[in-house]
Every structure is written in structure tokens, then in C-alpha cells.
Image (tube, rainbow, N blue to C red):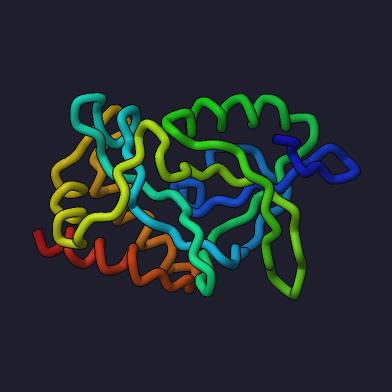
Amino acid sequence: MTVPRQDDGSFWIFGYGSLIHRPDLPWVERTVARLDGWSRRFWQGSHDHRGLPHAPGRVVTLVRDGGATCGGMAYRVPGPAAEQVLAALDHREKNGYDRHRVTLDAHLGRRLEALVYLAPPGNPAWLGPAPPEVMARHIHGSAGPSGHNRDYLLELADALEALGLPDDHVHDLAHRVRAL
């Protein structure tokens, strides 16, 4: 997948999960952005970060959803750091995620060509949908090398709330996990 580069070699990356509150990458500009036609869902397994190979956690991916909008953060990565950042992101997102090119709507009517990592249905770590109470119990009880799965969910929910980005799926799961 060709990375959509700016004239100076920089590129935009769209974060809709942990990249919102823990980007761990150099950036020269960031903005709240939205991706139309996609929903954020806790349908991807995490065997390497928020779970283990024999007991995967649940993390977010994007699924096509015609009338939906997914809010997140877009970061412009400087050209000199591009290859190093891409290698780090490819490693971070190795558990079923692929690079995709998307068009984002950003602040003040800007449209940005960006890179996003998403895990498509049918990838080896795909868990798919489940009843919300089942997903909440799963998330509450999972942990891996990067920490507890519930922390991933709750940090994401808090970050979305702080940015004023509504997401019923995330907030419902966070409410359920907090109640456990």
C-alpha cells in the first residue's frame, strides 16, 4: 500500500484506538478528524498486547458501516522520521492489521489523505461481534504484555470523552466494565 505523502515527505496517520491517547510517534501537527463510513468496534483479538496467544484480549478495529462516522486523531509524521515510524507501526499493528489509505474530514473543513491500520474480518486474530455483556466480561478479564485489556478500553473511552467524540459502542462497553 502506497503511503500518501505530502510534498515534504511527511504523511498523515489516523488513530482511532490507542494512537489517540498514546501515539508514541513523532508528529509535527495533529488534529481531531473523522472517517465517514466506518465504525470502531472491539472485534479484533490481541494475542500480543492486551492478551496472550492462548487467551486474546479484545481491541478495536474499523468495520464498514455506511452511515457511521468514526472520530479520532490525525497526526502528521515528519518526512525524516517516516520510514522509522512506519516500521514501528507495522510492528505495533502486526496482529492482523493492514495499512489502508483513507480520506479524513478534519478541523475547519480540511480533507486529509491518510494512512490507517485496520484489521479486516477473517484475519487470523478476528473475534467478531458478540453480545455487549460477553465482550465486557472478556475485556475485564484479559491481560497481556502491554497491560490489562480493561485499561485499554477505559483509557480510550476517557480520551474520546475529553475530545468530545461520541462513540456509543466504546462508552457502553466502558460502562459495563466499570460495573464489573
